[in-house]
Image 1 (tube, protein in one colour):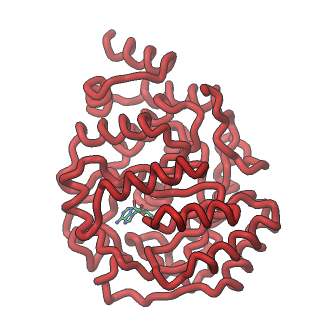
Image 2 (tube, rainbow, N blue to C red):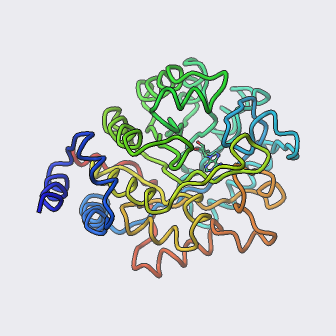
Length: 345
Ligand code: 5AD
């Protein structure tokens, strides 16, 4: 019927309007969307799952995002910064287990000078490893210097494209500057990743549809989409978290509108649902980000609860567990750097 035609059209042409997206996001039985996304994933990016080794190198943050445990005003968490030497140790470990991409992530920590980061990037690039940065909003010239040093990709979620909700959740920040950052990164030749939090208080299906339209409009190369998980000692600690099904719908629809991009099954999805990675991989995802940092620091990088159990080798994002999981799903582990395939343009 109507819905099936809509999904067929989307699978064939990757085009859809906002109203149609809302209809699909509201579907009670989304299995047809998931199956279409899985076919499109297989056709455009294949069975490979790319691993991106995540190093959370500082949990200092000067921002005050309402949902995030690392927000500056949260005095209850111990703060840490890794030494460049420690970061490079983790990189070498990642290289030794076959990783071809390293993601350097931190809070917005003014302590690290751009020149220091550039040197770290240059060292990593000597190992023939792609570098993804996820260190927040910076002036154009800093993005340019980091690119010149060899950074390949940048992750900066828009979090929500609803301006009013954005301003409510990010005091002192501006939606316009965030978009400016994404435009700068694109202009400078980075592969650009964005994405949103799903299940934020006050967020509607219309807003999520608008997020998808935005991803398509800016032609995102990567999309990180996960459930909002309420975190203690934040203004949203008492709120309800995001729902796994809606996250999966967002992943599947992302794959359908942007068939050749890289889409991770996110850590938050796996924390929220024991089968989160597997579900994500079946709904369009083709990337997982194992954490290859140092155990004592992993515990302190508390964006949301449940990320790190007492025994870190039992963590959902432990690399050995992830490799087994991928193979158990009859998928393969990507061997190259896993750039966007750019099949459509
Ligand atoms: N729940 C889920 N994801 C979160 N992030 C921050 N706080 C939370 C939370 N409470 C996500 C943001 C950010 C990414 C690094 O972590 O979307 O972009």
